Every structure is written in C-alpha cells, then in structure tokens.
Length: 212
Image (cartoon, rainbow, N blue to C red):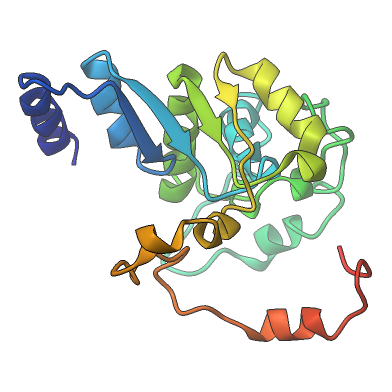
C-alpha cells in the first residue's frame, strides 16, 4: 500500500490544496512511511487503550533477551509440552526491570502476543514495526480517557515527543454528531462488525456505579 499512497499524496500536493496532515490508524505503518517520506505530519489513532500501547515495549523486551520465551526446535509438530509448561511457570509472573509508567510490570501483564516461542514470529514483528512509527508522529490518540489512565497517559507523553489526546470513549463521539450531519450517512458507525449487545444488557442489570 505504500507506493500508491505515496503517489496519491504527491499528486494531491501538486495541486492547490496540499495535504498538511494525515490521521491514520496506528496499525497501518505504511501511512507513516508515506507521510515521513514527503515531510507530511501524521497523527496516529489507536483502537487500543493507553495500557495497550505496552506493545511499544516488545522491541525492548526482545533486545533484553526476555523473549522469545525459550529457544526451541520445531519438528513438524506443535510446540512440545516442555515449552508449553514454560508459559505457566513463575517466569511470566516475575517482576522485571521497571517499565516506565507500569509499576511492578510482569511479562504476563503485557499484551499476550509478547509470549512468543519463535524468534521470527510475524505478528510480533508487525507490532514492533507499527509502534516504532509512533516515535516521529506529531500526536497519538489512544482509545482512552484521562480519568481511566491518567498516569499512563502522562508517561506516554514523556516517552514520545508527540502530544497525546485522550478523546475516548471513542464510540460515544458518533452520538455527538449533529443530526443534520448524520442524515443520509447511516453507515457512520463505530465498528464494521454488528454490535454485540448482550454485555450491555448485563451491564444495565447492575446498580449504577457498581461495575468497573
């Protein structure tokens, strides 16, 4: 996707109204590459919480030798029992060197994709690639709000030169659109998936302010 996007941006910038900013999903690293190649500022929007940006620590964990969890040889079969048991030992619960903003962090507290066995895990590498692009963006927008993760938001702000905007819960923003603007735009929803409502029905059955 990088070449066609770069070509489109170049074409647009040759016209009267040039592209000055790009707002992109954080898990689309090619948009950041295209923006940086043309000197365009980019804002990364993440559909994960500030805590979820613990994905940024994946590269650090690998450089420090914390992952892969165990070197193994795979012989045309699934990972052997010995390696699987490695995931249930005290190793994941051990407190490692403190990671900024996450006191007493353990490997088990980080996003579960960090528990890799294969040093060439494709999805792990993809998360590293995505989060490293955040270092040069002008703003980060995690799916969070200050009252929920203020401490982590402050730390993320200190880790990056980017401004961090907490405009969540993002799904509520759809309900704030003016009615005249939403007319004829029924496709504007928070998700492409059909909404799963049973959890909301369960929540409505509880007393006010009784559930976190």
